Length: 433
Image 1 (cartoon, rainbow, N blue to C red):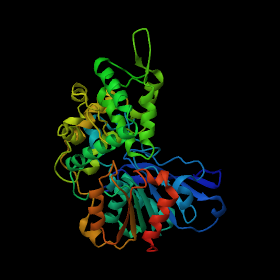
Image 2 (tube, rainbow, N blue to C red):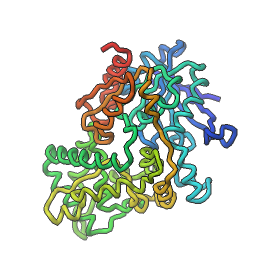
Image 3 (cartoon, rainbow, N blue to C red):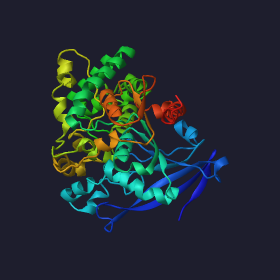
Image 4 (cartoon, one colour):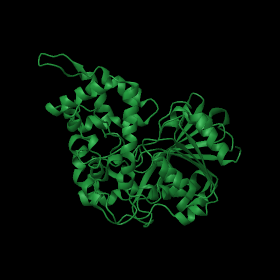
């Protein structure tokens, strides 16, 4: 049964699919996946090629667009679009503190989560594709982690692809998580320096907030324990096009006077908890480092271990030395499972995932070197989330993949410059530029 409805300029259809939980055991347990079909209203009766959109993450469901904003409007000129909630996200067998106990204890939950990486997502797509396209190939647009999935798709099932488009999501083919974070921390430091150069007064504002959190126990309204490390993690915003400005607005009015002295305002705390909580995307925290795991080495809380190699990120030392407090970026740490109510019940599960040594390869370099699928990728100069050098090395390893390297956009360029970004990638893939 499908539901079809209308929004301004578009016709939407809810689609649901049944796929194996474990694709190596196709006759075993199944899960239900959700996707939303979108077509321009004036083309609803036309036989159009399909574009599958794979969201960034991991752990985020597909965008819930209203109408046809950003890149979607451009895509609907040529395609029917399928917005897929990847397994474990949105309405596709969500994996969270409420559902994972159905699997059993932490060990069973950790085993279950090994099936929520890009290799399983690609195999889901190949089960879905014949039901959607009648067997025809489709174009895939992968943003960020969706780009990682697209490279895995080129490795595992290129026969299903007409064209591969990637925005801010060319992964290293062989880097361990440690390599990823050793490259990431210096990039984050550059983003923080650029933010402070733009908003110099934020140096003192951040120091004041950090000092308050080091000397006071602060619990946010949703029960989140707000530590100085949690405050620093708000630097995640600095990787998006408007993130520096949003961080500035958050910092500028953080305190209010109270009978007990200055305290963090309710308004500041409300905004902070919305930014910090993993309630809407817990899978991100649970498997984020596992998306880099491809051999017998455990990830072992890589971002936390590697951070110790960069002592300038220690807020207490920064305050003692009168240095700027540095924000951090796209990293997951064990303390998050103590601070966040949405993650606390999953701490032991996360520890077991971090300790696993049986990861399998996600990419096939030989197959990528022989690629015949038209492919193009937007690589954002000094992308805070995905290392540019790693991306360009992978671009050279994929036969025929063409790149557009730009500093016009940040990591979310497909959102902020959607039509232009998609136009450029389509032109590159079609060999029109």
